[in-house]
Length: 293
Image (cartoon, rainbow, N blue to C red; front, top):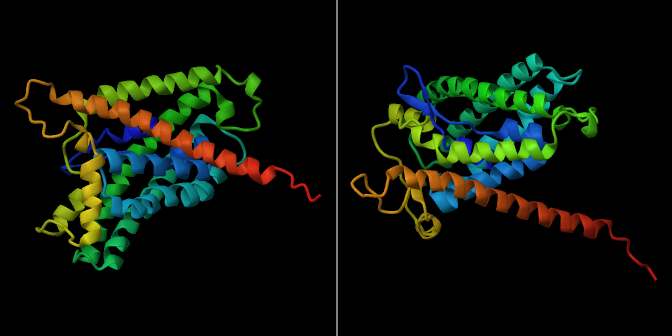
């Protein structure tokens, strides 16, 4: 829920006319492990696409790959974990967080370029697209690395057992319940209020495409039509606002954004708990002994 709300905050990249938002893959992998982190980020992306029309349903697989797989299964095990293998400290947390996030975003942004090339659906010049995508996502990665390090530093100071399994939970800072309530309050504050002040500049991908081509990218076909129909049907708050809303209406424009942040966080929680419940059921069935008599 925290990652859903945080992804709504686009921060401006100075002197570029672009913006970025956190992916959250490294943060989730650190707190939940790579597999649960990947599933959780997938839940965030699915909720965004289906109920808020943020990201295409047909692009969901690519988004899972570029935002989730590279972070959870490449940068986290190969960069973050080795840097903290000999013990955790605040300095190591910051170094590991920033480096792993930067590498994850560089791989993810290059993955986007490869996706568009392999798809055969666009005519974006490969070399120019790469030259634009990599530097802007380097800047975004540094910003996200700082945010990730700040959150992990708070958790390390509050309850270090969440980051270091060698620390006994009963001897580890404030109660887990307090940490979770703090994050829940942050969801309400970020999604319900700070989301109003998100940058209106195009994000790194949109900015790179605009610099690469003058034409708007679009695709046609029955599958695209079905995908568009599903999003139009299920997205009750498209683009994180009320349907058919306009600044001239009496209802505050930001009210839809606030509602989106809170409801989206809640839906993410429900979906993640649902996934966890299903996994638990299958695990219990596997462990049930078979009576051969």
